[in-house]
Length: 220
Picture (cartoon, rainbow, N blue to C red):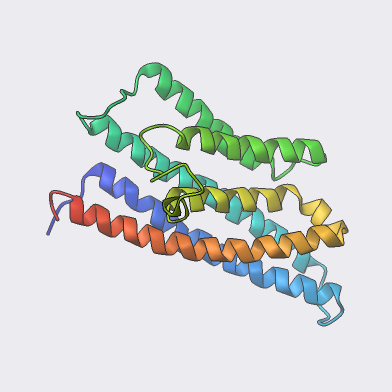
């Protein structure tokens, strides 16, 4: 039986976090959102806490995805660091810059939980998402392609995950507007369907990439 290296064990944290935490929380969020809609339309006499729980689950889902992406990106850099044939070296300056970007990504996401003003919420969501994009733009990260006009772009595990994260951060940032505006609620519902589709894409492409990694590893 092959022995996993510390880096390979760390790479397991990303799918474990998604499967054991993010997916169940997203399912609960969707269910609570459905119940909140039934309450709003007087279909089901439910307590007003349903909407609050829906929003709280959404914040947990968004934060879980940010953390899972940071774990996946960390593994990409650790693999490149251990690869003697890597084209670009990870110097001290780049390490500090990437660490700062990771702190911004997670810190802005957490600050989004309590932000009240619309402009601040938008800034925090964009800061968190932008920091993840900055880290993911590094050559050590496998994106397959950056061209959305190519089919490979849409089968990229990285890009579908980044888009999923952006949609979840948008939902958290726009929570008051979604609550008070019918067009925003409709946009939120449409985004929810896209989130469900992206979660399925993530599951498929994630399994594909793990299988490819296992076949290409020396132990395999």
